Amino acid sequence: MLARRPDEFGLFLQEDGSVTLKEFLQALHEEQEWRFVRRSHIQDVLVFHDDPGFQLDDGRIITNDPEVAQRPVTYPQAAPPKLLYYGARRRAHPNMLEHAIRPMGKRFPPLAVTKEMALRIGRRKDPQPVLLQVHAHEAWKQGVSFYLVHEHLYLVEVVDPSFITGPPVKQVEKPELKKPKPTPAPEPAGSFYLNPTRMESGYSDSKNTKRTKEKQSKKTKTERKAARRLKRHQ
Figure 1 (cartoon, rainbow, N blue to C red):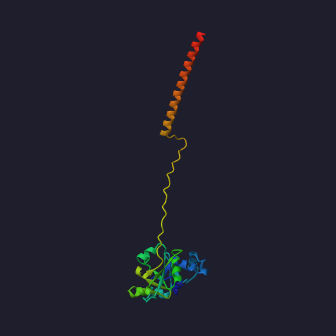
Figure 2: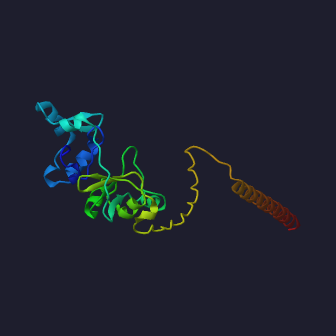
Figure 3: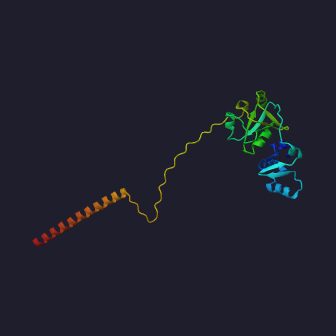
């Protein structure tokens, strides 16, 4: 797979003949008969086989093919077809249409000959990639270098946005978020908080009650005096 036709799986080797183990497993899991393979199975092959044909090093799987071991992996420059395709992450889609398709770290962006392969590679980064068309032959005539990886992939350093077409970027309006009303903090058990309104109301009520009682008391005394006077005159 690695030493023969990695492009058939949407993979390409770095100079040392390696790909990341994560990408390797992703490519395997896209094949129905290899979906069961896990990292532990690959490690078992290393342990129980005298010549497994590969090695693991720092999260990468490296082919032991003698031809690759003798010289670094290189890809020849070649004139590309009229169109190539790239499966972009949805978040990167607007940036690529405005600026460019650029290398991801040390990796050149892989452009696929078919839409199906571009989407297959794109799904490794995003479950719903955006398909971009690259007017590759026109870019090549303008001096952009393309490197052929067997039959299914081309590598490119940078693709200017003038050579890229794709779905328009949809402007998604963000709904205005209503500010939540502040929730008053609950009063801890056993605590007492002064409420000026209540205090003022309570003070007024108690004052009125006292005055009423005083009036009733005065009225009662007057009535008693009047009763005693009537009794004397009788």
